[in-house]
Length: 107
Image (cartoon, rainbow, N blue to C red):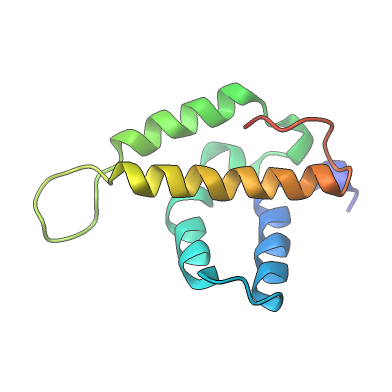
């Protein structure tokens, strides 16, 4: 598979694996956050090179309206979760930039 054909989700799995190998603190939380909030994003199935800023903005809009899955009543997920998820997406795009897989980050 060429780098340009690699999806965001495929590349993210590699990045998360490397972060785990490097002993990054909080990797379990990052992996959980990826599984719950990022892997299901519409852009996750797109090629890295095909993701544009509007894809990220649309995902952030969906995230800000996402219902929390807990027993504390009807509410949306907290802003902190959205920010942490965005930071993880940004770090994955930064890794893609460092590997010359993309020319610019949509984040």
